[in-house]
Image (cartoon, rainbow, N blue to C red; front, top):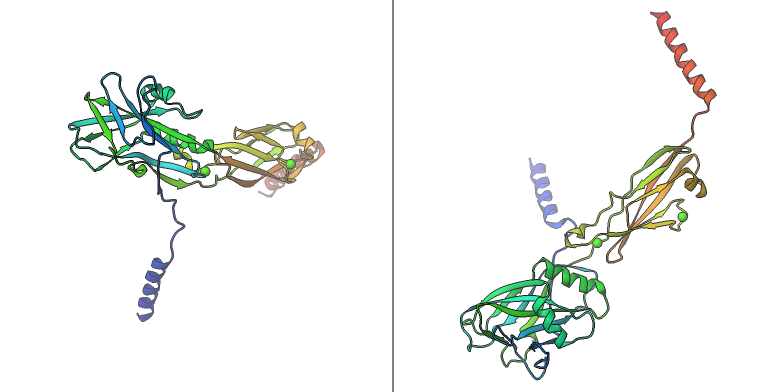
Length: 322
Ligand SMILES: [Ca+2]
Ligand SMILES: [Ca+2]
């Protein structure tokens, strides 16, 4: 009895101390804007990061649109799980409940307030949020939708000095509003992102068995990437057909057809051979898998005949023994 109790205790202790490999948990990053401000239709009324420090938006003519531009170059090898624009509700001058719609703001080329005005007004909708003017001093999170999240992700994947911009316009009801009024604090308009680290893809290819002279279809479609739910995918399948350390074929598609002539050109005749597959994901992470390719010799006709005769002989003997 005592042994069982001790054993149970040990199990309990093990349960506490042994952890499964940790799943990739999202961590959070808050990024201050590189540019922020508001602009009217011509861009001439652009008010930027300094000395202006608030983000004015109004629906009456000409409508003003505010914008926020973030440098994402510090983010690498990550996938964005969620994101929001966090703005400080900065004034008591405006009341009522309003909706701020966030739109795509093209900063892939040179930063241009005039051009951005159109982008902020007509670009893809990246998110929206409703806030109450009476809650002065509070922060509002305007969540990015799936288009917004993929837009952030694509800016990160682009690498280099990769800006992500979004513009806010008031959509309803009509009126005006100013965020971060007079404070000039960059942390009052942060982009908040949840992120998970990139994981290596998992390579897999089926073993194959053919006869000499037959074609073969190498198939790596069983490969996978755990980040696929965030938009990751396998961008290349490379095959080291003769397993000599150098890859012989590369394709964005998982299968590779080889004729008997192709196989012969790699010196692959009758026998069992190793074939290596390397897969690469969107961040350039790779993994390898070795499968086997069995090329069976076709039995000689005489051997075949002998086999058939031997089989017949056994059958005759069995009948006689009955
Ligand atoms: Ca991946
Ligand atoms: Ca090779």
